[in-house]
Length: 110
Image (tube, rainbow, N blue to C red; front, side, top):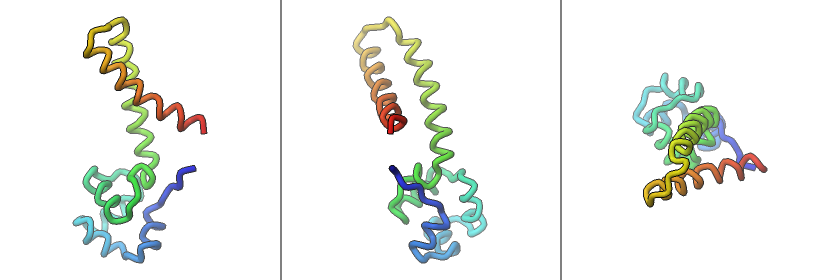
């Protein structure tokens, strides 16, 4: 099972203060407090990965799930539009869509 990480726990583990983390991320200390709401910018999420060596999806699981659900809905729509098409580009697209769906099925089976 994948361990989720909260920002306060990551701060405690690292011994960084909110102010020090804000300096590392080049954002305000107020913004650090708001990160716990789970809506970082892409740059901030990636910077947190650099600082704590933890994937953003493990720090912001609700946001990740929302994004993943939206992408998978759009992938299903695209897959329907590709139904019956067998040209080389359509086949490559279908293969890419199948790779997107496969990991999700594996994850929900555990």
